[in-house]
Image 1: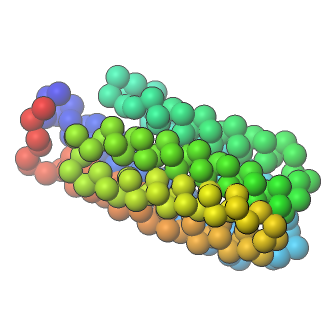
Image 2 (image 1 turned 120 degrees about the horizontal axis):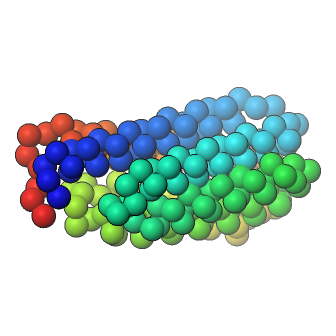
Length: 188
């Protein structure tokens, strides 16, 4: 990969991660401010977030598919499908929402861990992607094991997860953008 192509790849990848991180933090803050009784609002907010997050991931993959892992597409597809299910059936119960969110987070987390493993050869600080995958997976498992916590538990967990994952995504994005700006690119 040429130095210019490497810079462009890291800059665009970093920008996508920054966007996803800001979106995740926004979701977390929005969820924390929603009234408890507004189950439908949470379902729609989550659905729109998951669709947007997935489409961003998929667009990032299509930007240059030869240089991106297929796991980016898998994660994006999982997010879009989960968001569409949430928007199509907004009357689901809080426990069902917990299972939906838990399954989404578990599958997305595993795909992020695999993506981090693929990236470790080219990205020096790949551990932040790995940490995002582990946080996402742990959140998914915890929610799946405790779906009956009710609406308040799911709201608090989703808000906390979104902010933590958003911070980790922003950290990864900033590091990639810095790498794109640095004068030293590692040769492959």
